[in-house]
Image 1 (cartoon, rainbow, N blue to C red):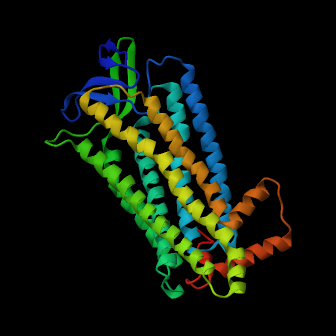
Image 2 (cartoon, helix red, strand yellow; image 1 turned 120 degrees about the horizontal axis):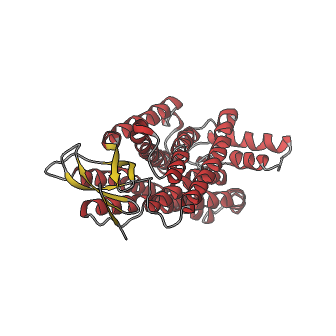
Length: 378
């Protein structure tokens, strides 16, 4: 990447080469994160800001519909949907950073102050991790109910769900405290004035703290939860198809037809959606973790190659997951799907609504031996 020599050090689109006076690391490479200088086109910042603002508005609207539905609908008061509420809250909290990033992409300099520098990056990682682990807990809950045939008395109660969600938030908030501590504002003198960036600077030790933190971030924030999600949904998938084979092999032709015709189409759709949830999650979050690793490598070896626009676009993709999630829930939950249709002007009759809600309540209390009924409210 082309760079220029300035009084304060080397500058290119997204890196400064400057002296670290805070921790005594000497000359270090500083990544600008959401700031970018020497841009080829001034309009690029406005384009990025436009995309970020759009995904912010759409995500808030979609997740608000889910929250309103969950609060007002008594038929949605299930364990899985309580977890979904926590996931929706994490989605909303995560995407709240989008307007601030959009503003910084336009201004270039970091003008939001020290508190926002520490808090915004820290809060984004906390919310992202909460979303990942909430999805993991949902998959565990579904696996226990479906594959282990847990009795109704032994299933999670709302108070248990609240405690688990609180534990996820508290644990994640503590795990990412280094991000809050080690993000700093740096004002660097250049040829025509100064620039201000919000960057991350780790203290100097015998081992590289930043490398250790990045490895732990990828391990606990991506590899472990994704592995658990994949395992649980794979076992659920096998359980569904085992149940399908059992029905097909049933000696009672009448029972076989009645059960298969009434439930098979819905079961297959639910299984496909569970698999799709994992695929979409991987597709929308893997780029962010990959770029974060590459940035760490750039900083450590002074490559200064990755522009901050790359980070912004993979963050935008992660924001997109907050917008996609509500629609994914709609494929699984009949009430949520009906709510979205109502918002689009497709109203159902009162009788149809009553039947759907009544069936939802009944399905939630069916015994665990009925596999399809356990997954209606995923």
